[in-house]
Figure 1 (cartoon, one colour):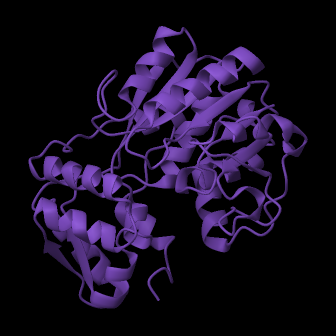
Figure 2 (cartoon, rainbow, N blue to C red):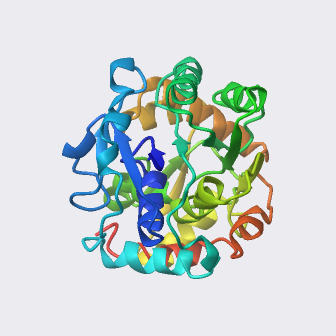
Figure 3 (cartoon, rainbow, N blue to C red):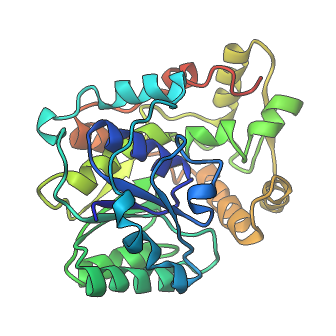
Length: 319
């Protein structure tokens, strides 16, 4: 087995699959829908059925190991292909090879308590298949041993495994998918409880670039990286940038924490996830996300995209 990507139909795993494919690194996308998913990065992408809450599916990635052959991403759309070519243009040429590393990209399930199944799956991978490296996607502000996947981070360290933790801030991608897409397209509004809080928005391209290095670099990272963007922006400033890009007025509608929970449930997010995100929005309103770092550039050799640069890859997203 080479690289297993959990949440295989999610934003970062789809982006990461393109980078792995471009660098001839075998991988397998694991999700509840498996190979039948309409959200695979391209038709016939190597995929398997996997559910964090159903341990009977945990064997599937290993049973389907023959699918772990890099496949051509000829069906990748122009936006993804252009952005990804830009993203990997400065990748160390020494890494453009088949990786000998056996590794797992860990993305928590959208459940209230993700820690125990993730720890059991780590044990399963280590004890049965000898997997030694894990890259964990976490949120900005997540601390080792703290809330959400913080205990998973602590567990990776305690067990002496090779690891990297990606402490990613809010995604630019949220403005063109489930969280904000419909309200921007149909109402000309962004809803949040962030008020005037500033956020260093990141994106799935840059997260995937950093994850790639965490997974395939010969030297074990054994580190936590803060994945943030190039600039601090309020939601009002984001609304103005979207207005200029789309040629119509987009406004930021300010909500209370409870109103934000209801808004996020309205667009289909589970209640537990909506409450967690609304609470994080309130923290951002208090300035807790106002941090800029050089970690993306330090790990990949190239700085993160600005919001305006990211927008250029989203043409047609709100048509």
